[in-house]
Image (tube, rainbow, N blue to C red):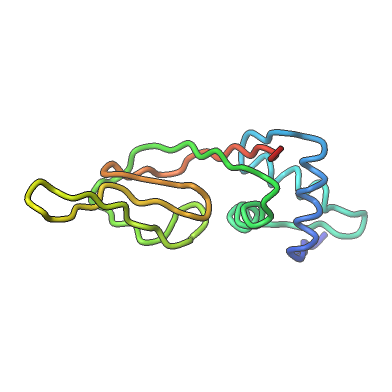
Length: 130
C-alpha cells in the first residue's frame, strides 16, 4: 500500500474529530498517530509530518499547546521559533549605564519563549480550547 499526503483541509477535519474524542493529547507523536488513523480509508493510507501537523493545529486555533523543554546551548542564537518557525521578538531591558540588553526572545504566534539559557522543545501537550 502506498501512502498519500492529505490536504490541509483534510488534516484539519481529522484533528477536529480527534479532539471531539479526546480533550487532551499528551504528545505530538500520539496526535500524529490519532490523526493518521482518522484519515485512513480502506484504499488509501495518509501520512502527515509532525511539524506540519503541529503548525496546522496552531493555525486552526482549536487547540492550546503546552511546551515542555530542556536547556540547550546558551551561545546558540535563535532567529526563528523552533515550534512554529515564526520570527522571534526580542524583549529588551535597560542597563544601569543606559544601554540595552536582550533578556529573552518571545514568539507571538505560539507562546514559546527563551532566555539566556536556550530552551529546546522536547514535549508538546495539546489541549482543546474551551
